[in-house]
Amino acid sequence: MKMTKAIRKQAATAERVAASTADAFVAEQMRSLANAFKVQAEAMKRKKKKKKQ
Image (cartoon, rainbow, N blue to C red; front, side, top):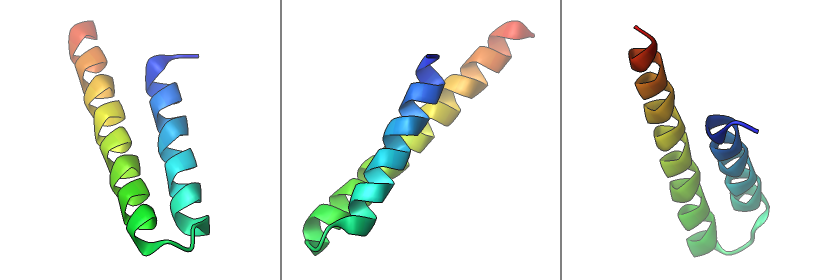
């Protein structure tokens, strides 16, 4: 599995956990983690695309 895809999968998992937890603090932390994963995946995608040019 490519790293970008794996990171996006982790983001999706974190979002599911955030949606299913009853603890507001944990939910916020998981949403934050999911966002960080998405940002990292996008940065990796841009870097790879830039290398191809």
